[in-house]
Amino acid sequence: MTDAWLSTEAWLRGVVRDLRIGLLFATRLPLPHPSPIGGADIARASWSLPVVGMLIGLVGALVYWIAFRLGLPPLVGAGLAVTATLAVTGCLHEDGLADTFDGFGGSGRERKLEIMRDSRIGTYGACALIMSLLLRVGALASLAGPGRVALALIAAHAGARALLPLFLRLVPPARSDGLAADAGRPPPSSVLLAAVLGSVLLLWCLGAARSLVALLLLLVVLGVMRRLCLRQLGGQTGDAAGALEQINEIVVLLTAVASRA
Image (tube, rainbow, N blue to C red; front, side, top):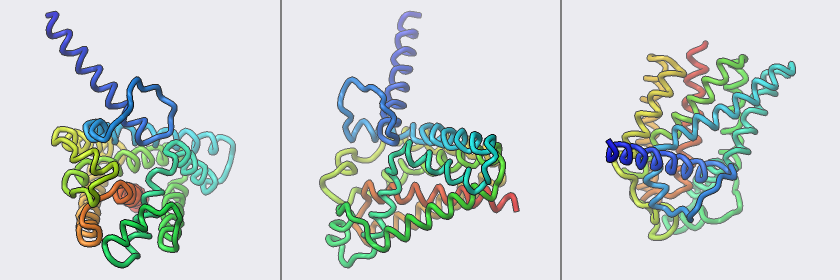
């Protein structure tokens, strides 16, 4: 009995530790952590990304609800909700989206990787950011209701992160240094658990038919991004994973909107 209790306690501590690491990596929430976080820690804790995404979506949903109660128009509420998610994540994935699109517009593998490391934003990156924000805000505004918006935000942020561990496992790092190289490939258990958690949250928020459509589209996007990264960069980077998350968010939100038409 004692051994079983100790085993369960150790497992719970591991779950809490991984959730904390996931929150520290994917958000700017000031959570305490007793030791520095390495790439291997992030890879192991990658299963928690859909759960972190759910929490980010709930923050956006709360802000939309407040805007709705104040009588603000749906477009304004949607803009505030997306702004809240940007504040929570510190624009982590938006930065990756811009860098990736700028890099893909370069010539030659080394030049593309060099551009992606440049903190300055170019035309491709700026246009990608503008379209990402427009599509997300527009999709939420068209839902026009706190309940629908909440479900769409949770589905988008959880679903967008559900296949990131799979992407990182399937595509080798493009560089020999950096976070992607340091982390290595996530373990199969983390990949599987992230996919299951994301699928369950999609099913809960969108229903059986719509969640199936969303999952199929997410797999298509993952396949396309994998091919692009291998051909243009020779592998994946953290920026490419961020770009994939952004595209996934848009795909899930558009699926939710199309289903309401």
